[in-house]
Image (cartoon, rainbow, N blue to C red; front, top):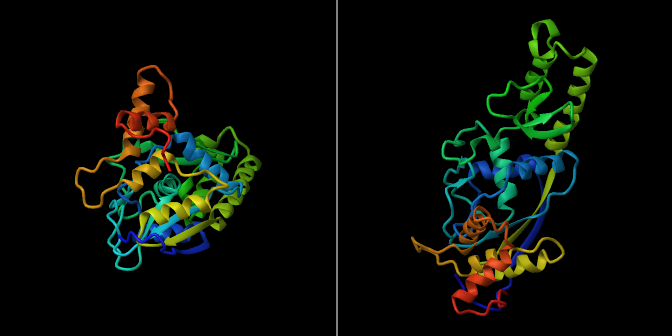
Length: 292
């Protein structure tokens, strides 16, 4: 990759529908670079993201990096295995956790999707509770109540229609609906329909940064995102020190994830990532405050 300091990146902002974003991911046009952290979101984070979408709240901008030749990337986004794509491909510089959540939940069951190797496979089975107007995960082996709709059906009009038909069955033929009235079920259906419309019409802002220099891409992201959540210092350090083509590359951000988990298991609680980064830099004989 070029080391030219005066290179001007090509930056293109745009807004795309959630359905189109998922299409790009399914085709393999969006990929996660090897230097990125693993997926670390908890179940509550997943539910909160969809609650924001249903309420039409912004979930932040996705920053994508384009370079030629394309740096090495993972062959999957969460549980979805990606096909080879011959056209222009973009790496997710920021937004991996959000994108993985959307792909894992909404593309469940599609070709290439498998949670066999997932540490928590149940996290992708998210439901909309039409009675409580919220999102939650079902407990293992729990018989789902009539007011629970799989989030996957909210994105597809045909699946939604078929699922609603089952919800509207008379109580005597639907054991789960015996304690509810027809008006209650109709209310759930109407509420679910509103949420389905919100998800299907939801739009997400993207910023595409095209440059062959990773340092410039990261700096561009940092400047564009200075009013929002800045990229983690350990993530930036990990990206800038990443060595393309190294089979045993040390990924600092991933190692700090492990350090955080070890600290929790040891009884210290969750230590701030910046503190851990500074401890690592000090141990390496580097300036602990030089994280730019």
